[in-house]
Length: 291
Image 1 (cartoon, helix red, strand yellow):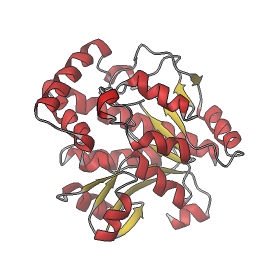
Image 2 (tube, rainbow, N blue to C red):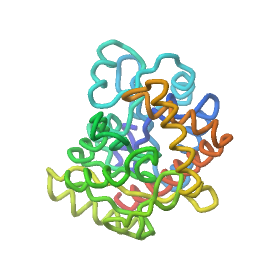
Image 3 (cartoon, rainbow, N blue to C red):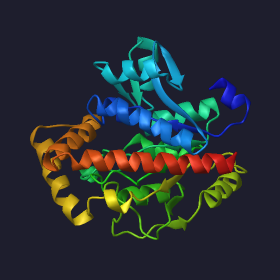
Image 4 (tube, helix red, strand yellow):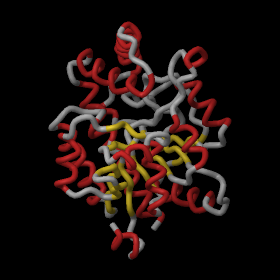
């Protein structure tokens, strides 16, 4: 990784909660390796980020990936948790916010993930809003996602991002995607059609040191999507199950993902893998254009 940075090679940061909290073993490590291979095939260098052995690791070896994928009691680390995991020597998997922090500290400009966190349904009562949104407002990293996770309140998430000055750009479409589904029913604030156009935007935005990040919303490939009207029913059932079991805070998303896996007979996981790989390929093309 040091050699890649020194040579100004295109690098794509990757989070690690998808390994520890998003998928079961062995699909988690298989997907992590496949995503890294997708990035290399597009001419960029993958940098999976995690907290291991009391350090922020930017770029994991195969052995590191195996250890992380099979580790027990891994902390799910956002901005508030990062230093605690480091100081205590615990394993930590980085969310979007923590991955952005580490990527920026290491000099990485492009980051591929599945979907960002956002405003949870019922947030007007619970105030449950992901730290990802504040991180996008403050940290100058391009986050390539399939939009906000569809279990969230997407209209409110979009409003918060607008308030915080974060450009939300749909790739190749005029409509905001909704993670497992290509359509959310919401118009995208902006739309661009090539990695080169996105790279040009990043270079212009970098002229303003305090402008924070940008969010790219990349629709899942049509062959892999679960249509929005079908997915909505599964999501409602999974959220009601979480409420009935009093699941709160950062445990909501992994719990709901697990419930959706059962409700969809595994289709949600297959779609999740497809969209992560799709985002990684686009992020690599952006990184190459930026370099």
